[in-house]
Image 1 (cartoon, rainbow over the protein chains, first blue to last red):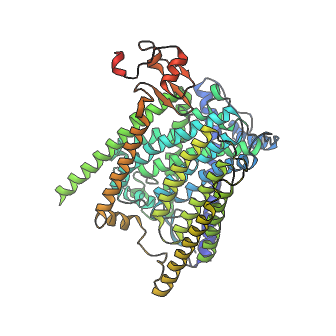
Image 2: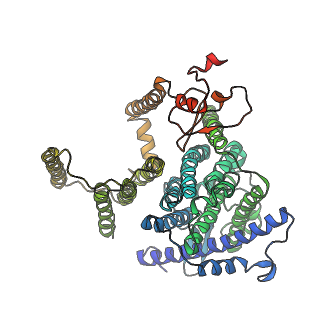
Image 3: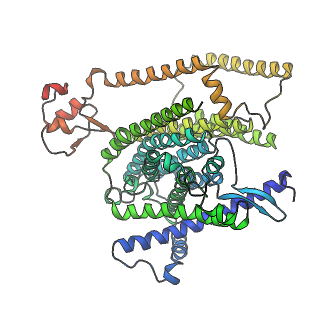
Length: 354
Length: 221
């Protein structure tokens, strides 16, 4: 098959997007169930285990139940924005998946050789940051349009929190970019390939990794940074007035964000799809190697998702002023320090090396 | 293909731009402006300038407009009523300005047509991050540094303007949400707990709390 034909290329990309979308949705369902089970374990409960074996069908049962609920729209709300907000949230969340490399180049019969990534382009990392930064509108506008004080407070908190932590998030990634010399995520992963995982960026950027992890949790509004939906203070925060499918969209957006943020952490710091020894055992370019790599990629993502759930079961919530102080007075200076350190080391190394 | 994309995004940009001006609700205007920025970013991508497109979305749509929407939400600006034309004498000036703008656009289109220059194709590397970075730090280093100093001056200026007249003492904390949290002022040696009053200035909040307000934090020690 001729891959250079634009129509075949477009068709293949649509197929790839569909597969990636369905995969992400399945991971979302698994995360929702996993969160409930792990939280139950942490809190000494049983958790959902009635629907299907070990409760595996619980997310689907919840999905159907939520869909059947009445779709309420507050009387005094701004209807158009009220409808628009959950769409923005979920679309911007899902848009980021197209640049992540799921696996290495594979050779398939009839299709030829192609890498397991939907779109490769020069500014992939900036694209991810841009799409993430637009996602805040979903929450902020939802808070405003509901015409509810709790929602408005949630939206305001979310907007303030996300602009504050976006800076730290972006700056924590600059160290990796300095090391890699490119913004193309596929190339960054390729550079980290090696037999033992000794090329992974986490070894060279431990500070950047920790900063990114903290800022990413804040960006996704998860515990301990879940002030926009602090249920003890704001009922449910920005999505108080949302029900049925619109609530479902917000719910999905949060979990998709968790997954994409974990994907970015994996891609930049943990070597992406690289699995130690896999190249040595299976040989590069084989189908088995690609399979192991994709499994490895998802295993790393699941590790991050577990970390998220673990934190939720362990940590209490920040107070708002603590949150702001932490973001501006701790994370930001340390991220700047990390950049200066990385740049200095690279400069010294470069001038000594030649 | 690129013609369809251009018409789609240019139409979106123009439609949103008209909506920015026509909407009476400031929040709708702001949302429309975000639409303009996103549509422009898409046009940049079709012009083989992905870096500019990404920066456009990150800086304008993702940072500046979030602040604008934040302020509109915070102040809860009411929908502007339809009122009679104020400043009616500006209408001829506006028409003149519009005529100049259209003339300039026509001139640019004409001169491009005459020169016969071709737009950069999708394979051009002028708009890529690498070439922008190299040019920014070699050929255009001085303008780049001057611009960054200008930005730094603007930041320092904004800080000093905001601090002018000691609106807020150094120990007062501003938290987004129209509140001044004046903890040290109320109980300088009390426990670390925040007392919130709704006020615009520290002096006002101190008055509301019934404590003596000293503008200089050193005097209290």
